[in-house]
Amino acid sequence: MRNKPELTFDTIKRMEDMTWFTHAQIFDDLLIVAQKETVCYVWKTSTGLVVIDGIWPDERVYQEILSAIHNAGWEKERITKFVMTHGHIDHVGCGKWLKDNHRVKTFLSETDDILRLSTLSEEGRSDCWKDFEIDCYIGDGDVIECGDKSISVISTPGHTAGCMSFIFPVHDNGEKHMASIFGGTTAPWGDENGKELQKKSVLKFMKASLDNHCDVTLTNHTVFDNGLERISYSRSRLSYLPNIYVIGEKGVQ
Ligand SMILES: [Zn+2]
Image 1 (spheres, helix red, strand yellow):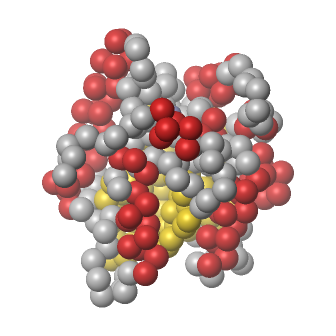
Image 2: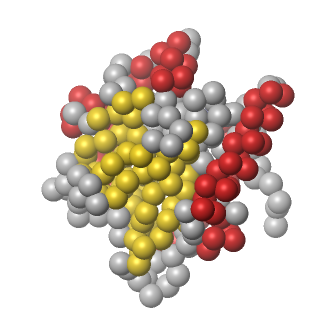
């Protein structure tokens, strides 16, 4: 058993691999969509489907999100919002298709929108992750209203200066749980100030998770939570078996 996730150059390279995807319904109202390393979520609310993060800028990501929605039997629901934790290419990815095809309302911090738009192009990478507008700049303490539910926004700078983390309710066989997702899983590499900021943000988010009685924690990178194994379990889980994402308030801490 390892105490730390194994994060290597290969891990980073695999974030660009768009040849393999998987998805699962992990709660009554939450789907997870993943490629090998990066994950996004689709959350069902009374005001439509909310996509949380958007993986890589590749149409195959968007198609996989649609497949997940179809397999959950949610195809009659409209996709109405796209909420992003931070402005990196592997989380903003498929926003263009969500915007063009579904006219979603988009949410990101202003600081990270500036980061997104000012990131230099790289050869062999699509730049279309900059080709859509942010409708609503989010900040600490904001609440994104989604009809019967809402997302609490907590500013957690470090990984990026405008990184946001979220707390929102999910349901398992009708029972309510509170989920937390920390937006930027790693401290910025080679940046001591950023590292200190990240530590403060982790403590702040632990407190927010405690105050909100979070008993589910989600991540946007599979390397940190045995993500692919958890998805695999969830794909064939029988309803009377435990939900592998419900780890209790202590577990979240
Ligand atoms: Zn990032």
